[in-house]
Amino acid sequence: MILVNKPFFPPKAEFYAYMDIIWQNEWLTNSGPLVRELERELEEYLHIPNALFVANGTLALQLAIKTLGLKGEIITTPFSFVATTSSIVWEGCKPVFVDIDKETLNIDPMKIEAAITDKTSCILATHVYGNPCDVMAIQAIADKYNLKVIYDGAHAFGVNLKDKSIFEHGDISVCSTHATKWFHTVQGGFLATRDLNLHHRLQLVKSHGISDVYSFAELGTNGRNCELHAAMGLVNLKYLDTIHNKRKELCELYDTLLADLPCSFPKWNPNANRNYSYYPIILESEEVLIELVGHLFQNNVATRRYFYPSLASSLPYVSHSHLEIAEDISKRVLCLPLYYDLKKKEVKKICEHINQILC
Ligand code: T4K
Figure 1 (cartoon, protein in one colour):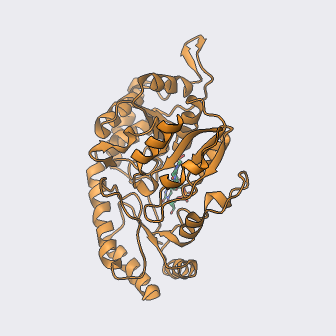
Figure 2 (figure 1 turned 90 degrees about the vertical axis):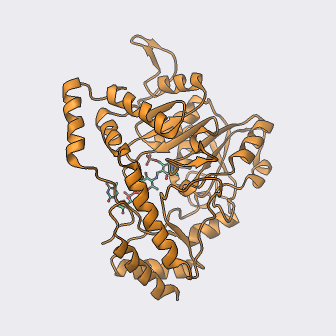
Figure 3 (figure 1 turned 180 degrees about the vertical axis):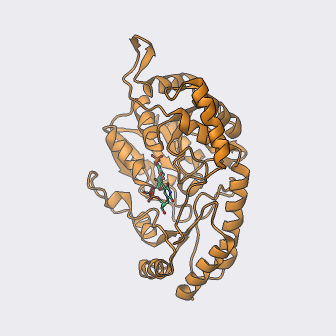
């Protein structure tokens, strides 16, 4: 079976070399030397001022909401992974969904103002598939209404907007480094913020609020990640160009082979580089999508409906709203297999099968 995703496995020996270091250090978790080294490397590679490595991307979102002290309503996108919404609810806030732009598939800034009430505290938007939101328009609205901005950049590792890291935008940006991401640490995530004071508070909150051995400065939790995961990240950082180039080649092959078929693609932000984190296609109807998924599956090709169903109309713990574009797109969008080990001949085979259904 060709899976939809597969983690990158670096050479075992390079990972084991880090295990020797861990055994020498006799340090396993709680902001150890490799965690700190990974944070510095992330700051250097991504050109971001402050990175904080945490247990996973979901917890990173929760830490962001908690540390900014958000209450009431948070405006967010219905077209994302469930963690974007569930973290809002988990932190005791109410998600208010705003429809997406039909081309970029990101939250539509033109529709945000109408959703703002006196209870709104924040805009939490996802750079879906690594495609940057309209950060300028979102920031202008946030400034006008004195709102915080959090970006869910789970898919956006390595994306720059006009030569500046996408993680420099908003009050806090978060990223996931889960095994299925193109840069991964097995499990993990990180937060980035330009505000040094906020960074220090995030550090406290992710470590039980402990400011000194016997002093507690904040209500905290355990959001720490460990030395083994940091080691995987440090090894994988060395392979970023290799991984990126391979994924780019595979995506360009998909682009060529699917060019004349009746399907469309998100409109990628022209001022940003693509990180090739996913390969989404938009079919003409849900019926065609279901037929295609079945046909590919019969031919041993797995696909995934990232992101179906629309979060605004499906989660049992939020009041439902029907947002036309998100409803429509989520029924017609399909992610094709994309991972480092995927072979070009497999992409060709996948496209032949797609051809059989769409032509
Ligand atoms: N915000 C957004 C916008 C996100 O997309 C995510 C996560 C988050 C926040 C939260 O970040 P984390 O808390 O996860 O760090 C996967 C990932 O688990 C999840 O990280 C990701 N987004 C989401 C889009 O995809 P599932 O439930 O689809 O994963 P799963 O287990 O079905 O795996 C997908 C494919 O990968 C399968 O074909 C099997 C293959 N696989 C997976 C793993 C874990 C392997 O071959 N080996 C493996 O070790 O959520």
